[in-house]
Length: 262
Image (cartoon, rainbow, N blue to C red; front, side, top):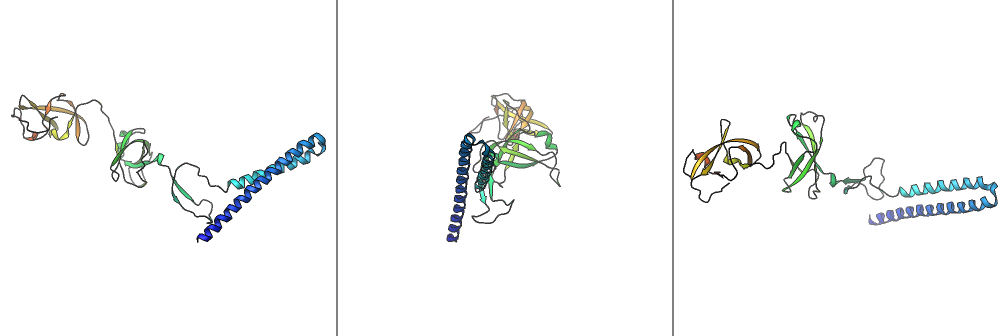
């Protein structure tokens, strides 16, 4: 098999050398005809037409040889990384047969689904966080495409979130979570969610003031997994009870012993 491969490579090299020789021969003929035409134009103007025809014929031959030579080299229409080679040297191929598969890691994206109600909360250009559980990493991303029609057989709309920076360790086909911020708040007061008590849609928390617990009724804003925004009811710098608050009442004596203070 190695000998056959060597013979095929030698045969291909000979074909390329023959084409290169043909290109050089056509170029020589072209240059010779050009010089001869210039000389004959000075001495014998009557043969100009014939020599011009010869020159044109040499140009056509040179172009044909150049095209044949260029077809011996395979060039990809786009840049990328080779992920698989589907053909071998000497194999007969047909038009349309994929020879090489290229992957463009600069355009890596995650395809997700959103519901009809979520459409108004997501917009193209919105910032997202892309989590790849198998890598244990999180990457910044941007929503670039939102489908105009739902996926066939569902009422979910495909969304493409592109990585903002190269993710060399990520691989095509891996599962990822896309966290989309539907609203954003900056420079706000946040507290741990476990510190907030809820009863009949009333939110409250307890702070330590002069050694006793003081109840605070809260107006909450945005929330995420571990913290929640407090719009009214607390002031920055107050000592918040984050453990045992479910046992507190207004005026209950409090003693902090090695606990967390927020």
